[in-house]
Amino acid sequence: MNWIQCLTNAIHYIEKHLTDDINIDELASQSYTSSSHFQLIFHLVMGMTIGEYIRNRRMSLAAQDLLQSNSRIIDVAMRYQYDTQESFSKAFTRFHGMPPSKVQRENVKLFYPLSINVTIQGGFDMSRKLIDEFYWSDLEGHKDETLTAGEKYKRIAGWALKARGQNPGVFDALTEWVLDDSQWGDEKLNENEQILMQGVFARFKEQNAQLRTYLKELELSGVVNEAVFKALDRFDAELSGCSADERLQETVTSVFNDFSVMEKRRIRKIMAGNPTGQYGTLGVDFYGYINYLKDCDAAVQWALFMPDMVQSQQKGFKVDSFEYKELSAMRFIGREGDDLDDIDVRKDLFRILDTLNEYKSDIDYDVLFMHHYGLSVDVGPWHGFWGRFMKAETPVPEGFVYFDFVTHNDGLAGLPFISQFAYATFSGDVEAMHKREGFDSDAMYDVTRNIMLGQGVNIPYPDKYWTAEVFLDGCDKYSTAYMFSAEL
Image 1 (cartoon, rainbow, N blue to C red):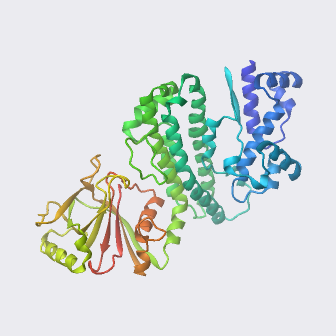
Image 2: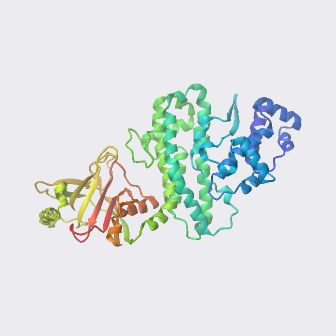
Image 3: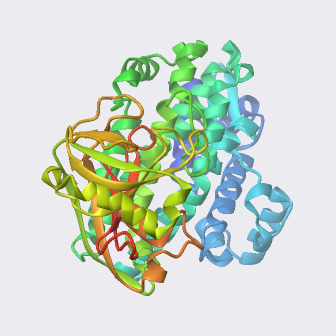
């Protein structure tokens, strides 16, 4: 066995046993050499003793553990083989420059596993810090907890909610890093492969596997939203290099087969896409592979925490019914304008549409139809049209506009829209249904959308995105139903 392989095996062994009592003699025996000789070679090649390496790795992981909610210092100390909290605190303070009781994410010092690729890589590398900016789950540290299934699920949903607040910005930073030409010289290619393929992609796959196992154990109790398994399947497929987007498939496959193609900027542009913002709603020139990973990560988290959020958002009102509809081709006919704020003007509009009763569709109500003409919210302004959904090819009265709906996506941004949507009806306090404070639009909009997100249903934003308030009792009353575009 050569020394490079010996040292690589030793590092792998250390990584698997960082929470155990690591025996140096056991490490040395795997290399068929004496303990003293092994430690000398390790020190010469790695530039530090085995003891220093183990301590650095434990301190790096301990800081991440302490950043998790409900983490106790004494538990972390015991986990990483410190006899007392005091000895752990002293070692932690020397390493991080702050005591464990005051640990802060932005100030912790991260030390990565070393690897041998002709030169030694790892340690305190700032470009690798990006990996640990993701809000990773800590399921391994909670395996032996004596909680009910509901309590365990609530805790993992809490992690998902926090991850949703942090991860989008990290994905955008990852996109910007991939697009930064200064980070992709030939001398950085091996290191970048470790960062992207092992540090990010492989780590997400590992987290997904842990989540799947953990949730399967809770499944029989009935607390798990089954949509999370579909979201994990989609995420794992993307992480394995099987992109669902035909435009990306060839490039993604080539990168997974030979990472050296990432030296080409055109390849990196396809892999990176563009930053889409904290909520994933910003307009982009191209939607790349990392954008899809960002969406997949979101889908897993939404499936975990959205059902509870939907319940908490129903204050003073409730969802009476919720269903998905796939209608035949249809046409919306209506008009926009400030004059329609006047109820009498609105009534006149609908009186004209009443003359088209022979063309009624399955949605025979007054509606306020809203969209951005297939553009992102930061590019195209909101438009609201009062009118009705009619049968396809319905003649359009003078002074009105129309928007056609078809049964399938034509792959182009904007018109025609798709005649597939979620349909929710509400009852209770109408003022509460239309409350805007604390909501992206209003309460009905948020609840309808969040049910869809929790069920893993695709909202075709921005290309075919539209919504509609439905006035079941006429345009002079409050709307109490909502339509939200979907791709089923």
